[in-house]
Image 1 (cartoon, helix red, strand yellow):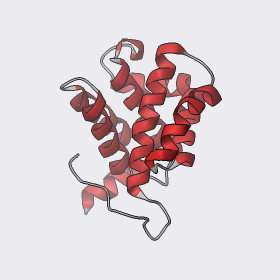
Image 2 (cartoon, one colour):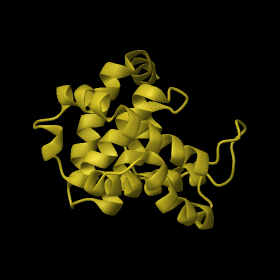
Image 3 (cartoon, helix red, strand yellow):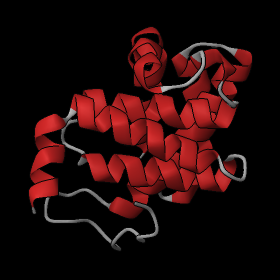
Image 4 (cartoon, helix red, strand yellow):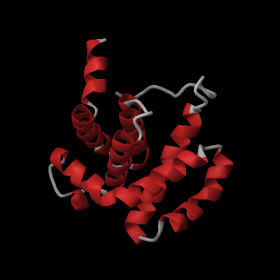
Length: 159
């Protein structure tokens, strides 16, 4: 599912795919840092916000992802349990962060197409994770999307 480069510049709906992609990369790093050391969402966001500004990332989207994952982590992990082969806490830290962000987007951001969520999670896992971690992330989120966004997935399969 991966391999496409986001379009340059904002779309008609005002979303800049490149800025969103950068926001997801930073969110993965922030969620990873939070998983490793804990802390509050505002503290974690403050650690990464300065870098966000210099990278021309979508700061509001970055903050939504980080706040959303931290706020809903228990529910996200519970929702993911159906699709993983071990306890969520035993999944590699990078892959766990990518899965949590992907799960948050699939469950709480219906404005983002499921294919975009999965592609971005794969890309961030490839960039920061273990050699084959992205294939695990792909498999888990693909199954989760089929369950959580069944009408959208079925419509895409009919096309």
